[in-house]
Image 1: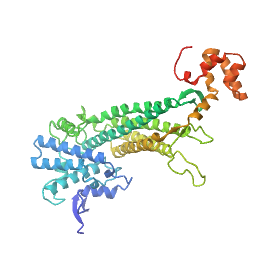
Image 2: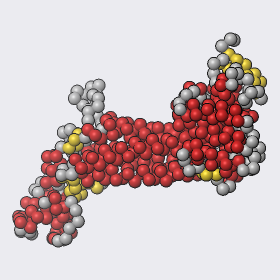
Image 3: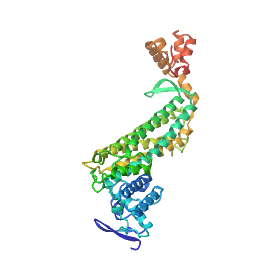
Length: 466
């Protein structure tokens, strides 16, 4: 048993690995919750959020005279080291767990306490010198420290997601500029509509995704309101007077985010509204992203029996039986990521609704769903940009020929010959295979000069007068 140390809690003694910075309650969580296989250590921004919260709490307790200076500085130093990336392997708790986040909160408390003990020249587990509960968790409860840490983690994760979103917007916009003169047929309901440019199509992708930058940022702004000082249910039991606002102020100073104390801590403790609305923003982004990937797969379909207006970069052989086949695997994988986001958003909805009375115990699965969405979307955006968008090329002649032979260009004749006559021309062209152009001339409806002017695809790309 020399590779273990004994620690005890409410339920009795338990062996903990001798070199582990975590303690007995973390070990119980390891044993109890073998659920998703996704551990807290997989989410470094969440771990940093925990360290930010514990440092802010320690600073507040020190300033209010509850923590001596030496211990405060050691706690702050330990938290800074965690923020810098050290000790992240000491957070082995499954992200999905019972207990409303107690295991994760205690994991942080135990790791920080044992780092401090090491700095004090003490052995791990000598908690009489620095206690996970009495010192690291002083003036706190899981019910305020845990959700606050989630929010700090999500604020950081949102920065990374938005950065990737901005980059793919730039990539689509660059393609829009590159394809500005590639005339093609626009489509509605998968039927020929009116001409446009491939550049307009790609610029529209950039514009629709660009809208979501502000949506994500605005919704993430709701995370700056925290319930530190609420302790168990929002009444502030075991927290000193003035703790809530001072702790929020300290957390703002430490993180750089404009953190504020919730005006009603009893309301804020069970409230999960900010998670719901942020999750909805990730779903909105995923819906748009999936639609774009559907378009990319359609536009590149073929190469002989599809639209084949664009070429996607070939990434891998497409079949184990069909030689020469190359599939749109990058848009396909992004579609699947988006489906996962849709499901996680529903999980957030159910978890947010499932709270009772003064606490929502479902925050572990709720937070995990949102963090997974951010990670999946971040990776998907990078993958789509790097392995697909930047390498797309246009089949310019195919696009132009489709316009020339399309029935859809008859729409441009409406203002000149009327809807009824335009419909007759379209119907006859479809039935005979003759072109709209030839039929209008044969029937003497318009002069060739006027027809050439009207049906020049370039004249159909923007609003104009008769």
